[in-house]
Image (cartoon, rainbow, N blue to C red):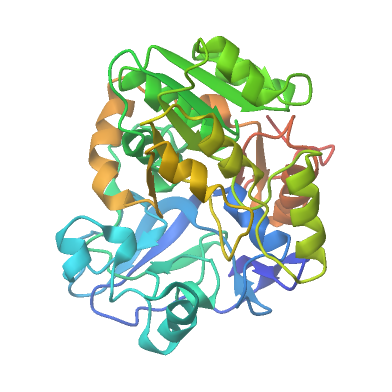
Length: 401
């Protein structure tokens, strides 16, 4: 089969690799019909996530048709399914609490020591996202093996286009959980750092949960315009001082809740961010954490901080004093996708949530390296790239919107 493989920083290739096989009675094999490039994939592309190996198959946002099942799978051949990016057994202590991204059994035992050393406990398994998270092949391919297929994938009704439901695999549940973790109350003012896919779904979710005002913060004009379509007020941090603007907009109190949807590769010419970039480039640090620092300082006293953004290592200059003295609450974590998928699918089918607005480009799988470069280099114009195996390239070689 054809699949997108990782070979180092800014080096991804579509290659012919072995077809996946059933390895466990609970497995299923999915023929991919649509897969997407996630902002988190750019952390792999930029070489920030450790334990990647040359030839690893990328991709954790995907859906398709079931073509083969193990004897204990609950899926049937021909089912159309969306697959969550988190892999969960359904039987361990954490799965019993619907904390699927904390599953104890999805990450193979011989890979668990890596994350345990870094984080204190091993991570759950994730598709296409390093050997620290299990070394599973991802879905930017023609086929993929899905472990624990009786727990994760959700069956999609006939006649529903892939584009309407594909993002149930990751970014829609992630944006929803981000808003839920912010414990939004009716009438709240919520500030969202980052208008990428997760940030935009956080904006949409916050309004659905009763927020009276949502303030979206970014520097890409097109992404800020998308946030405005949902009713958000906007701050372009290249034109306005964010903290001062938030104080003015909230009468000096600060937002009731803040959401960091930026993560470890924060942009912007700020002193702390410049120092973080120097440390990362000289191997004296890992993450660039300007956005979470700013969110904590801006949040009102007694407010809530939600952090869906990906961070990977250790940070300094963390405003721990402000966090404690202001009495803030922080909730974060990888998304418990399986928990949210059924309700969000219903919301999509009832027309309460739109996802298709996000797709800016659709490409054949064979052009996936072009899609990565576009998404990396042109984040104002490229909001989401969907890849389709078997799709014929446009005559000009250009991406279709």
